[in-house]
Amino acid sequence: MYELNPTDFYKVRALFEPLMSYQMFCAGVLDGLYQGRVFVDNTANPQSGFVTKDGVWWFLAGNPQNETFNKSLNTAIFDRTINGEKGWGGMLVCHPAEWDAQIPSIYAPHIPIKTGRLHYTCQHLDIDWRAQIPDGFDIRFADQTLVDEGIEVPGTVASVLELRKDSTDPDQKAVGFVAVHNHKIVAYSVIDCIVNTGGDIGLYTDGAYRRRGLAFLTAAAVIEYALSHGVTLVHWDCEAFNHGSIHTAEKLGLQLNHQHTMYNLILNPVLHEVNRAWSHFDAGRYPQAIEICQGQIGGDKSAHPHFYYVLARCQMASGQTEQAVQSLQGSAAAGWDSADETKGDFPALTTHPAWNSILEQMEKNAQKEAG
Image 1 (cartoon, rainbow, N blue to C red):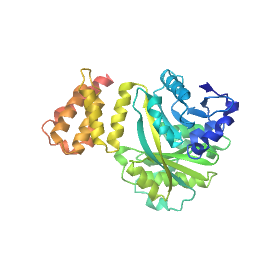
Image 2 (image 1 turned 30 degrees about the vertical axis):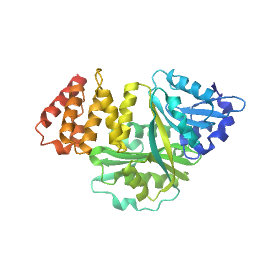
Image 3 (image 1 turned 180 degrees about the vertical axis):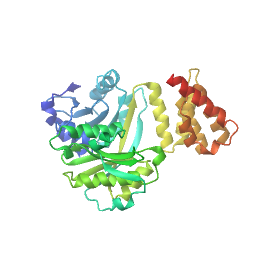
Image 4 (image 1 turned 120 degrees about the vertical axis):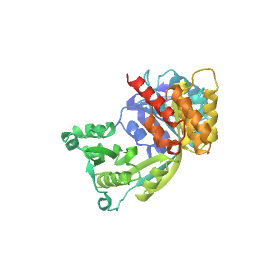
């Protein structure tokens, strides 16, 4: 496996063209708009290639049957050639689909975390979103006035402001809209990756403010603005089980283009299994999540509190109330320290005799962590 000089990135464009059509980071690296690295099997005539941005966004294309390249990629991932000493791992998208059979060996000894994803696009928006803003909320363009008014700006929105700050054409760098309530940003939508007039959208809504249409409103606002300021195609990529995101995309009138798979890897083996368990739970695959958690808890080593917590979520979703309580007690004993999250996830347990003691232990864990 060899690393290409940026001046030679053009040699792999043919391999990555299908990914470049909907993965803006991949297109941005190969177009020279973002810093990134490209590894190939042959510098003169590449047949397999790997692109990475920021060490964590991974893209794989070309011949999936190139065993030597695949083994070298496995080594480069685990010796941290790809993302450095502080990197946590990566999120991989491949073309063609035949790569799926090779990912287990490339990620070995870890089991890949596979997530189905849906890709939507938008070229035109005709929605009167302003008439739908609820009382007490403002939908505002993300600019310096937020900072000037003393409003705390989340990191993603701050990144948009930074990208726009010194640009001669800021609308081709990044745009964003926020929902403000009581002098606080409670939701936002940003398009912070724009390549060749294609923009990738990202959304966030504070948990306490969900189900009020704020994701729809901020997304409508930023899409409308972007499409009238040089962006010709907005990309929306979400997990196939994220029903809230899917509903919002469809409500906005976005078009479903295609489905693909993302393969996640966390280099820390325990955290990788934690995330693999969460992935199964989020997708409703409770038996698989339970199997992972019980396998970790059943050993002699001290289990990560997330395994108990995911197990409790699965048991509660399956109607196993007493088992869920026992697992929550295990999570608290193992160090779980988010009482507020627990309250939100287990409202049906508030009258259980063990509920208060579980929360008290979690609050003690939080105090210990803070101190």
